[in-house]
Amino acid sequence: MTILLTERKVHDIERQAKTAAIADIAAYLQENLGQKITAYLSGLKDPKVVGIWAKGRGEPRTVPAQRLRCAYEAALMLVGAYGSETAKAWFFGTNTRLDDEAPAYLLRHAATPEDLHFILPAARAFAGAAE
Image (cartoon, rainbow, N blue to C red):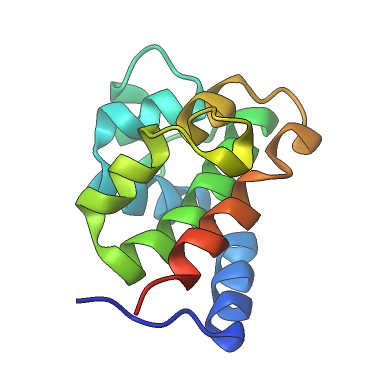
C-alpha cells in the first residue's frame, strides 16, 4: 500500500521531525529500520546505544541527533509511502540526486547540518512518486 505525499503531509512530517523527542525518534527508527541500521545512520559503532536512547536513558550529542532527525524525517515519508523494507533499501541504495551516494553513507558521515542538505529533497522526490 502506498500513499500520495501531499504538501500538507510533508509539512506535518517536517514539524514532527523538529519537535519529537529523541527517544521517540530513536524508537521509531529502531522499530522501522532496525537497531543496527539506526546505529549506522547516526554514526554509532555500538547498536545497543540506540536502545538506550529509545528508552530515554540518554541522548546523543548534537551531530548524531541531527543525523537522527534527518533520518527520521526521511523515514516518515518513505515508510508511509512504501513501507519499511523499501525505506531500508532507499537508505542503502545509490541515489542519482546525491551524486550516486547512498543516503545512509551521507548521514553517517555528516559532520555539519550542511552535509545533510540534499537528503530530505531526495527522500521527498522518491516518496512523492508513490501512487
